[in-house]
Structures are given as structure tokens and as C-alpha cells.
Image: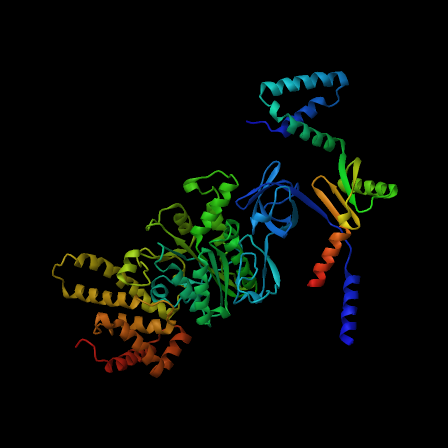
Length: 133
Length: 507
């Protein structure tokens, strides 16, 4: 059976758990040797992507993106981070800020596959649709 | 002035009522697109056959998730997939595919998503019905007991259909499969029946002609046409019969009787095969996927007769299957034959001999319909089935040209007249009382002195005569639905009176 990048990444993560820095080096060397033996070095990019995902998931870390029209204040960012922690059930959040004038106002939060659209643009569109009806 | 104030007041109200809310949504991205199929990355929590919304520059396009794989989702696109680009955002809508249903759809032509195609304006939806639904269970059902009068003599007599039955119409191309279904729809006028005609992969010119015909016959007052044309994508063809059934279930839930025609399921199977192959599901026999049986069984199982506690409504299904050169043992025909409660088999030889509808009385069966036949029809038709069967045997035997005894000759003569009576033009359904009258005259030997080539004149004349001077008798047959001895003598008298005025009888 073919081993998917996700499976390889998961087994690497499990092999690395509770290992010291010195041991980690040895484990990774062995892992790469295994990949070479199984002709899977080509899939290494995908394995790295999957590994980052699994790492974040296991450590309770969520990468989120907040898009706003005019930038957010520090207090608001703090509030948003706390909100995302509650929403996603994560321990820590790394929030990237982005500015997009097109959304007019409000904020769009994006983490993982989820999106929370509280932008003024979307709400105006919804209002328009409702009025047309 | 007052109107302006009113508008502003309304506007203010609307804005005040409008709640600012942001919902959490699941999104993914298109990684591959083509042939009506999209592969999507993300969409973590997506459900099987959940509706998806593709955001494109031209607006939203809907899709349905069909393949849930480890790290991607395969979806069919309902509509024009050319507007979707790689990397476009896809949103889960958290609901299963639904169609709007309501009384407003009667008399309309809609696509499988419930959008109007006839240019008669928007359709007001009373409710939304899921396209896929599990059929009613044993508890809710009841055995078939009321008849569907098709108005086609050979079917009503020999292969009767009951309300809630699934009767397959099967035959080669161009030998009148759709004609039977359309005649049946036309004959439902005043029979307390809603009709839905689902056209799957049909030429739109044919459907346009058919809608015009229905309108002309006044059948659009109770009929809806669901159209997925030959130029529509396979995804629309695939959902069309399910969408049609969802519309039928709206009327079923109101306790009404519905007749639904799927024209035709072979094209439906081919559309599903296309989708399955594009989604890279493994092909099986004739390249159909493994679940092609379930495809049709779950559809036809939704035809039902509900018991009185559950509203007492019914859905009668008339699926149509097109065979290739009369091959009934191909994959899809055998599947659907085994699912349905009988089939009407149309034979090319009969069609070209001019005996239309070309129903083969030997290969056609109705497994439950006879319990739904009205008593009067049962009395006359029971003997006729025997006559037809005997005639077929004797006719084959008589071809050898040997001397025949009197009894055999009489049977042959009777059989020829029966065959003539079974002939019927398109768009001319016969009311059940008239059918009983003509069958009655045949089995009682009253048509024996009519020349075979004048039988159709005899028949038409009899209907005319009966409506003029025997209206009371026809009414009694239609209302009592049984033949008493007194009524039978009256019928004999009527037919003999009519024959007294004829010149072409054999002396």
C-alpha cells in the first residue's frame, strides 16, 4: 500500500515526541534514509506541509489571519486572539494581520478551513439582497 | 406624499430589523476543475451530498459534494462550470440539496433546481424539499388499491396500473414509449391527480412540442415539467428525477395522488456513469459504477401508497427505459425491471405492423395493478386476457394453412377483432366507461358480425351513439364501477340498437 505524506508526517511526529535535541537529529536522519529507501524523497515537500499542520494541531496552535480595512488596534487584536482561542478550542494563536480596503470596514477572520466574515461589504450585500426581495 | 413616507418608513423598519451577524463558515479552494467536476481542497466538515457555493466573478454557482476523500472533496457543479477558476473559494451551505416546491409549480416548466424555464415569471415557493430523501417505511404504506386510468385500452384492460405502483415502460427508440406516458397524463384530467413529467436528456424541441400538446389538451392545469435537456451538464441530468420526486412529495404530503414519469432512466444512468467515471470511481459492468442499482432503487422506492393515517396520498411512477435493438437483458433494463412492479414492453414488430400502441401483451405484466382494477373492468378484461393469449398461440399455428375446425376459426376471428380494438391513436385516451362498453360487446360476441377492417368505425360510432342515447348507462358504469345483471342487459340492448343502424355488418 502507498503511504501518504500525511501518514509519514504523523509517524515522524510520533517518533519525535519527548525526544531531546540530540535524539531528534538521529531520528530525522533515519527518517530521511527511510524516505530514500522507499523512493519517497519527492514527496518531502508535502510531508513538511503536513508535519507543520500536525504539529500545530497537537500543540494546540492555530494560525489565523485577520483582514481589516484600516488596521486593528493592539487592544482589538488581543480581543480577537482570545475570541479565536475560544472558537477553535486552541491553546495559542498566531495572528497575522492583513489590510484590504475592499472590505470597507469590520473584520474577516480566517483560520484553518473556517472563515468568519464580519466585513461591512458582505453585510451591505446581504442588506441589498434583502431589500431587493 | 403618503407613499413616499410609507416607503421611507418601510426602509427604516427593514434596516432596523436587519441584524448584523457573522456566521462561521467552512471554506475550501478549487484545485482542479473540468467536465462539470471540481476537486476541492479544505472543506473539513463537509457532509455527503451537501450543497456547496462556488464564489465566482459572475456570482454564485452551486455544487454538490459527492466524493469525500482524505484530503480533498470531489463535487459536481450544477450549472455553468466555465465561470469557475482554479483557486476560487468554495463555501459549505450546511444543507442538503433542496428544491422549492409549492402549488405555484403546477403548469410550469422548471429545471432540476426549481428555476423556471418557461418565461412565465418567478415561482413562489411554499416549502423547500430535499432532493434525496429516504422512502416511506412499511408502517406508513398500504397496498395499491385505486386504479390509474391511462385511457389506453390495452393497458387498462390487460396491464392495469394502480395508484402507488411503479410500472416500467420499456422498448426501442421511436416506438411510442413517451406517447404512452403523455396519453396517460392527458387522461388524468378530472381524475384528481397531479402529474410530473421529468425529461432527462431529451431534445428540447421534443419537450417544447410536448408542452404545447399538454397545453392544448388542457393537461397543464395539473402538470409540471421538470426539464434537464440534452445540452445540460450531466450533474443536472443526474439530479433531475430526484428533484421531480421531491416536487411529487410536496403533493404527497398534502394527501394528494401524483403521477410521475421519468423519461428516461437509461439516459439518467448514462449521466451518472459520466459523473462517476470523472470522479474516478471504479467502473463495473458496461462501465457503470457499482452503485447504479441503488441509484434507481432508491429513486423508485419513493413511489408509494400511504395509508390513511399518513395522509393517504400516493406517488405512481412510470419510468421509461430505452433498449438497444430489443435487448432487454442489458444491465440497466434488467435492474429496473427487477425494481418495478411490472413492465409494459413495446415491440418494434407490432409497431411496424401498424398495431399501435405496440404493447406486447405477452411480455408485459403488472404485478399489483389487478387489485386496483375496478370491478366492471375486471369482469370484461379477465376473459380478454385469455382470448389474447389463445389468439397468439392459434395465429402462430394457423399459419401452417391447415384446415381449421369451427371453434378454432371463431377464436381466430374474435382475436383479430380484439387486436383491432387494442389499436388506438395518439392523444386520444378513451374513458373507462367507453372501454368497458367496447370490451363488453367483444366478449359477448356482439362484434363478431362486424368486419375486421371496420372495427375502428364500429368502435367510434358506438362511443358516439352511447353518449347520445346511452348517457345514463355510461354514467352508471362510471359511478357504480360494477356490472349488475340489469345493467348488462341494458348494455346489450344499447349495442344491438346501435347495430340496427349499421350497413356494413356481415349477414
